[in-house]
Length: 175
Image 1 (spheres, rainbow, N blue to C red):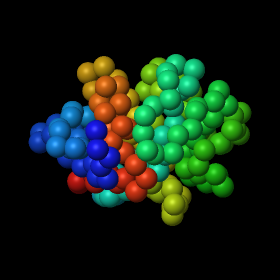
Image 2: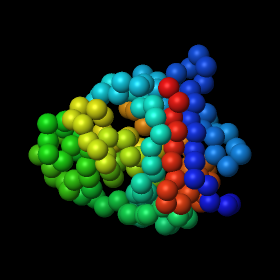
Image 3: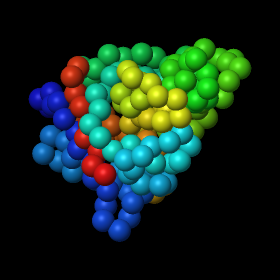
Image 4: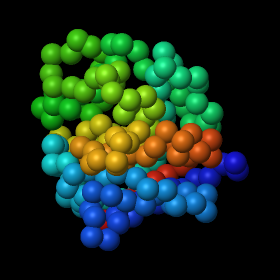
């Protein structure tokens, strides 16, 4: 697959928690946040933020899978990897080492959702406390159940996407 630079996400009309992801001339189903796509993202609101964002890097479970093929920077997820979601903490919306005293997500989850995670530059390069954290492109639950604000696809779709991405890739989420 020839490397691409741009993904687009649109909500399914009448089903705000479901979406279509457009990439490389193909259309794939995806799950969105439980509150759908929002232009006023807040921590914990369940909304998927609208806008255009860089795809920064890929985190993956090296203990469960081979290194994914992609042009994006890769990092294996370790047992002590977390992501801070405490808006008042100095490491808000940043990776942290566990145990961590403030509220956080474990990156090495018991389910398969974070086996492969693409980090979106939502509220990351320029952080604003309370505007939302840990916005990723990750693996979907069966039946495309809603996310907490991320975008989720099946493992085969994720492999296709990763193979076509390189540094400078962006995602446009229409709201």
